[in-house]
Length: 222
Image 1 (cartoon, rainbow, N blue to C red):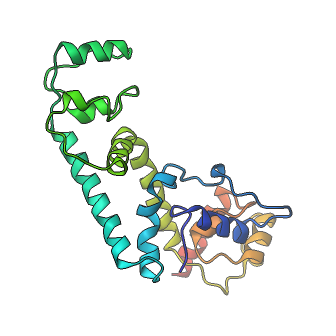
Image 2 (image 1 turned 90 degrees about the horizontal axis):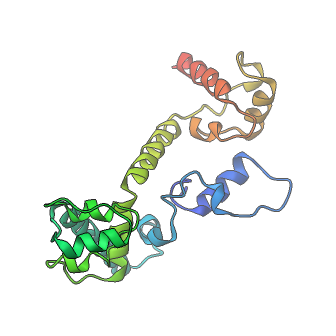
């Protein structure tokens, strides 16, 4: 089992130590991952419970609870996207007090929630059909809607990296005699022997130009 950099900080730690190495004590900080919007503490169950269940570390009962939680999150997000807020003077007064412009008639609850000062709890008086949900579910729904644009962009970055990681590198490759690579890149690649292009791209000392040359070389081998 290999945890990806987008799945958790343990995946970041292992990948850093393998591909970059360290000559001093390694400190695991949030700034070390490029996928901080995905590796949040509030969605750890969503990221890691399926992995734990697959290897027998998470019970079927707990895994089922996690699946039910995120099914409820998806349902609430869909409801907010398709439900209009109760507009009028009370809502306009609230928005004015928060420094936001007045709402148009028929505005969806999700559109209001995307405004920075608006929270899920604040919208309760203007959402009479709101179901009774746990705080964990409403927190996830709020975060997912409020930061959807940023999260979607990061998901696309993850998919691009996975595409590179699907491109395996032959372990018999002779990097030291490869044309187009700088000397430092040849030495680092020869020492670390990355399994795929994704791992190779994260090696300190391997530049984008080196990666382009490596990809061209691999295409010629196919």
